[in-house]
Image (cartoon, rainbow, N blue to C red; front, side):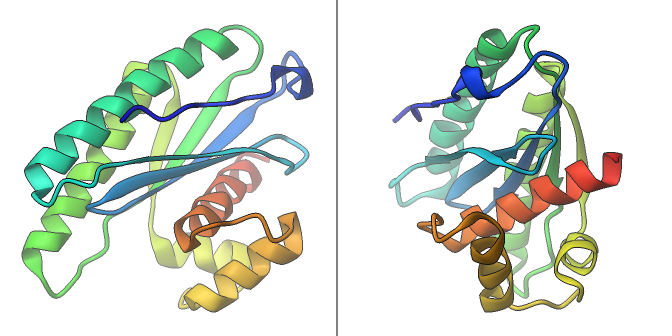
Length: 173
């Protein structure tokens, strides 16, 4: 099922850079967008309920790809977009590690194809730079995100993606 993307372009000013943080799992892609003033612009999720990873990957991967090309058309010359995607972490289960790496690679490639500068960032790097410790817990990440943007994150992965977007923004400034 394709994700509905809502970007209020009235809050995006020409020449303003938008920063997209992307958090990937074997079940979904979460992205959060922030502007140059670190205001949260939107939260997006692409997922699939299919049980088999191969089927899920194709379904939400195609939806992400399609949505990103539409977003690029909406923003066209309003604001350039830069992105960071969390690099796959090693999980004790090699199959899960490969699945997450596949999703992260797809997200980064879809960004590049759509003219969005995108880089991988290690989870310990963005956690250290944003939260203050490279091994920050999920609770510490969510608390930071709530303190910064309010209690608006329905899922932990949105808080992670918001912090990744913030890392990209601060890295570039």
